[in-house]
Image (cartoon, rainbow, N blue to C red; front, top):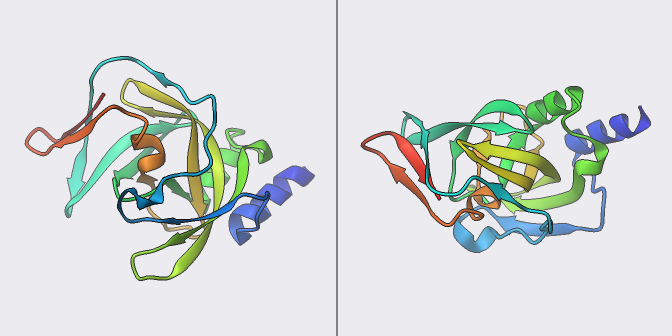
Length: 173
């Protein structure tokens, strides 16, 4: 119970739980993750096409994060997979996120130039179509209304990623 309370405080207050604190810009490939797991795996060989929904120039896909379906924004400019504190609390309540999954705090430069803190966590699995990634770095942002983002901490682990706007699918290999 004590560990759960600490996890909630970390998520909401952005308190660092470890020595790893880094700055990652959210624009382009400059935001490469510096914290990596040695157990990263991808299941399923070959090409996979994932249906996407477009709304106002934004591409949305459904992924499974730690076994839970979530609609995320496909964002090649984001350094990490990003979830809000609401999704983190939901995963916590379901037992799909624990204090052992907390890595530390990271700081990001957002579009308006300000620096924001986020709690860095490890997701056990992120399933995109038939592809399953394990030990994916993600950031919990201290904003309950923040959109979920599928960023480079997941996407860079594929050989190729492309968007087929005509057929409204994202192809990954």
